[in-house]
Amino acid sequence: MTTRNLKLLKGDITKVKVDAIVNAANSSLLGGGGVDGAIHRAGGSAILEECKMIRAKQGGCKTGEAVMTTGGNLPATYVIHTVGPVWNKGDVKEEQLLANAYRNSLALAVRNQVHTIAFPNISTGIYHFPKQKAAEIAIATVRAFLEQQDAVEVTFVCFDEENYNIYQQLLMRE
Image 1: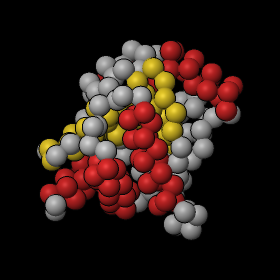
Image 2: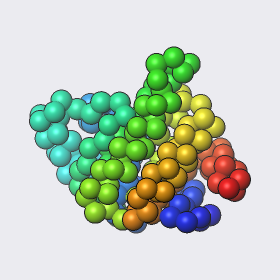
Image 3: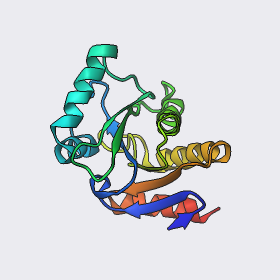
């Protein structure tokens, strides 16, 4: 499914050929489970080495912020690591922090002349952000960004059928 500068794909983000893929990282930047672990495994040691350099310089990555490394062995040239919020019933600005994760990833991409970027479903795995609410925030944030800066093409990559169906329904509404 494609709309202006916005695409939807069901699949494995580590196989997507774009300028940059976004990693739903943890604040340590040292890899982990889910998409984070998959990206580190597929991308190889170069990603981890650059993450360690970022940690040494700034101490990791805060929730809602983003940093960039090489794509290593991935088909993507770069990995933009962003930390999504852990869902806590919406009581600690999780929605704002999730929007910041998308917004800051996109801003970093544009600053680095990235023209194509792919996002996973940030925070909907072990961070337990409600999938419907996360998709609404992701789409609204990306659309708002693209209204101001349309030099980037965004692909939402959903690994599972549930997220794919949610995104597809939301994107077809408009």
